[in-house]
Length: 470
Image (cartoon, rainbow, N blue to C red):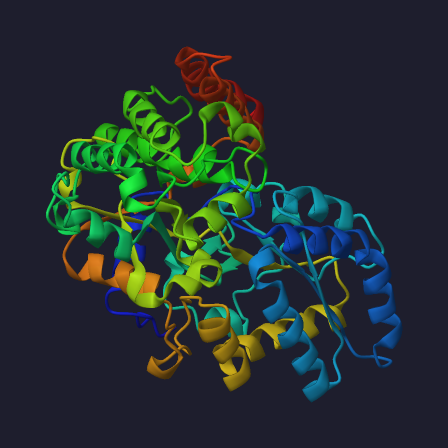
């Protein structure tokens, strides 16, 4: 199979990151969503069985149908539109149901028990695959897999060679910042840097954030960082994405790609960045348990905070600031050599086709996926409307995303920085993440101490790993 890169810059970073041994997330957390989208997603998930049944009744005799259980609420509208267009063009019924934030795994388990189960679903990497590997159709001979630019973006069974899942989007996260406010800050007599390019390590980031917090009234903001909300719509940013950093640096130090027992060598660094997030903030730390993703997004979009940890997927929610006002920094935690650190890049989104579906439904699903990545309408939707960077060779220059955060990610690669791999694929379980999240929340609320976070991180890892591998 021809293996050319999607983008000369970004894909090189993706592959190198994956080869470090992390690849994509095993998280079952949904990335981001608005309150309205979450409510809608919940209603859709609850109505999934009746929708799928209606779809089955509407399908022409002898022809297949598609039922896609979508993981990403922020792209629900685009998937609904794309499904309707495909049905209009082909007559093949396509149902898209979107799981609520943080509920994908539970929703998938429920839907797979029903008579009209999803024909297309998602897993979040090798660990997430373990629950569903017996349901995965071999995509080795599919048109979808033939267009994949590298096997680094596929979940391939080591023994059989079966292609059990294919990544459909490559994403990047870091600390998004408001250029207009930060540039204004740099002109102030109290500024500790003259230009944002000077922020290339934790000490400088902290000095700038402390200075902004101290002078927030003069700058017209409520805090340096948006609220680090720890409700289920937001906590994934810290118990998964932020927690990736100490794991990544420990693996680098130990020469590992995964581990049955985390030592916690960089948990002091994790504490330092978490302390910064919750201290130089728009919100009192004791209130974070109830703060949501919507709260943080609103604070950033309305210019109430300068820094906002999130990723390329958040662009549509903050685009009102204007592309020229959006920047992104790596998440610095004080690790040695981090001056050359880039952004966190990888994938946690793998399509899988349900091998328990009828032959007609499997073929209909494969045909739909082929159309999505080869048709003008599908490529336009994924690259422009959804803002995805995809690992398929069909997305030629005219279908490159216009997302400015992706362009920033490309520039970091061009500048020679080392991308941080998505090592949270090796987190042993969702229960482990929930334990870390609870400990972080208690620490912020002053009802727990940092030792509780360390215990959840280190002891919890060993326990959950053992349970998952018994």
